[in-house]
Image 1 (tube, rainbow over the protein chains, first blue to last red):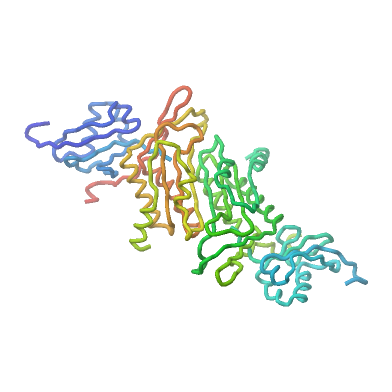
Image 2 (tube, one colour):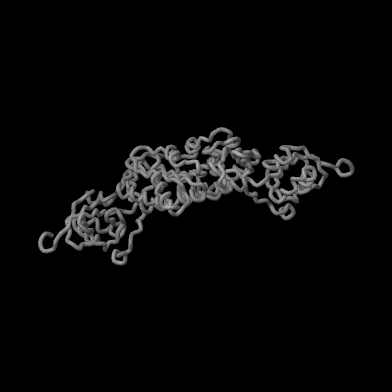
Length: 88
Length: 88
Length: 160
Length: 160
């Protein structure tokens, strides 16, 4: 990723079954400028193929607000992948 | 009331402002056979004229069930005159 | 809901008129059981004002035997209408100070919707149909609270 | 509701994630005040079964900072929507045994309708939008509970 396209660093969090699946609670990600949340997800789905199947049964948050998948990330963002919530 | 028409005895109860108005919590009433709850009330309204004005802002019960005013009383009935309820 | 389970449920209910302080915590424990997941409670207590006038205290009186009967009818009705487990309905009588609980209702159920619906139905119905009366005492006098006229059968003739 | 009174009300609210047992009685006392007349509470606790399987215990985890933020948003929203006074919303995390309270909500208000509506809105919204997850442990294994997908903005393009 280093090279022609400038990159940015973000924090990526996984919860619930997604955390179990990846074995990863928190990761420091480096992404190309202009990347969307969907592209962040695809990166991890490549690394953890089982993740891909959960794409339609999860949501994503950016800086602790639920976000659309086509939202562009910015340097320093806190991004989290969240399975269906079941509190209460 | 004694005489040609056979009579029956009932218990009559007053609650809330009706009790205060009559100064009467409980009374033993003697009524002609066939009397209705409306007639029982009229009896007391004659004795306590201030009662009459409450006729449309009260309900009556017979043996602890709310009752229609044209219900006929029977010997031994427990009749109660009840202002609008305000529990809770 | 089968008849026997309804009867059993009603036997476990706690329907009372009391003259001492109501112990809400104990009533919640009474309705709580392992097959439930939700308890909704309603706690009605004495406000410090009524229509802008400062209240000193209240006095509640009841047609006690009929009031208890009507409260039991409410419990039976919510068991029939809603998928609930246990019910506590307790009303206090006599003199009550500001902040003291006059009525406490607790309903347990496997799921929250039924518990909310039943608890609300219970207090709404209690306020319309249970023969209890509240007198409000102010610094300069006392008044009987405005209340609601319970629904009554329209005519004995049409009923028979 | 004026801005200043809303802010004041929210400062008095109790919105927490905890790891120890929830003290419902203390939370009810926190929301209780003289100008109120009604408190409605919701107590959600661990059932002994799930879809017919006997539960051993549960574990709750949360995206804690976001969950707390979403719980505070719920409190702010019910202050705006309903004529209520104070709110407590507390969710427990970690391991919970059968019968233990996982979430407790208390809402005080001058009148009961608002307290019921706000309490129900709060728990319904919490279950849809607060990032907390429940894992159910049985004698023969564990599963993540079925949950709800929080609503999300449809597209960043239309939003900007």
